[in-house]
Length: 94
Image 1: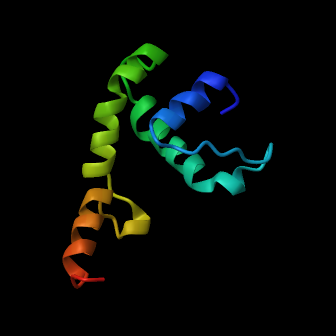
Image 2 (image 1 turned 90 degrees about the horizontal axis):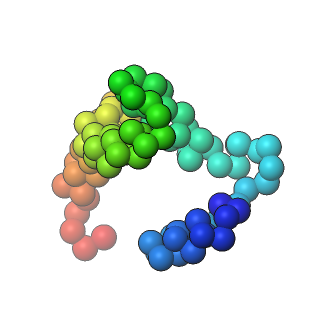
């Protein structure tokens, strides 16, 4: 997030840009794992893995990732399934 335009765009989306120390992926582990999974399971198996094609496909891939992609840390459920079950199991008012 060094580029001024990127930081401005992130703020417009309501995001707070954060930087991590150079050469310390452990401080950004969740993001690193997500990018690795996205590349492994979506980009590299894409018919056209060029930047323009990836950007066009990204919304579809993210929807699939959230709705159907199993995650070991979530008991091999998708994020959507995990959240749905968690909210159903949580008593109201908490």
